[in-house]
Amino acid sequence: MGAILLCCAIIYITIGGGGLLSLLRKLRPNPEKEARILLLGLDNAGKTTILKQLASEDITTVRMKKKQKRFCFSPKIRSEPLQVTPTAGFNIKSVAADGFKLNVWDIGGQWKIRPYWKNYFANTDVLIYVIDCTDRARLPEAGSELFEMLMDNRLKQVPLLVFANKQDMPDAMTASEVAERMNLVQLQGRTWEIKACTAVNGTGLKEGMDWVCQNMKK
Image (cartoon, rainbow, N blue to C red):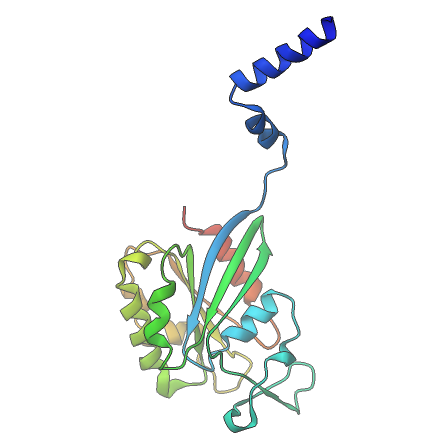
């Protein structure tokens, strides 16, 4: 009888203090904090290769149909071309980093798809914008697309990371050159950074994602 009364007393105290579920939640280890990352950029900038590197996946699976070939070089066998597939829609992958579960949305960059970028702006915690540093001719276009979407109120307080990609190529612009040509200094009042990277071998990606985790939208 005494044991029953004691048990009832424990249940009463637990419920009175916020409920049994609240107690169980407090006893559980803290789950990873989730964040929504939007990965954008023009077609052929290297977004999907970056996403696969972050997810520790084989980048040689980034393929395309023969009629749509664009070539870059495989990091494993530099003399053999890697066929890269432009993303026709979007890819989503979850990446663990520094206590965060980052749900990364990679949206295609072809001009026909760009008008739909705005459909993915809501609830974005960090925006990552990828630049092909070998494509000098389209840098103004890349800059125009970036500044146009940053005018959207849904991205107003969202931190921005610019990945200056393809630094392994001899004709690549440096990160500082990209920042100057795109006039990124005018992004006053916004948390932003530009990081040099090479998607095909992963160079610079960790540094970029460290910045993302440190500057996550509150």
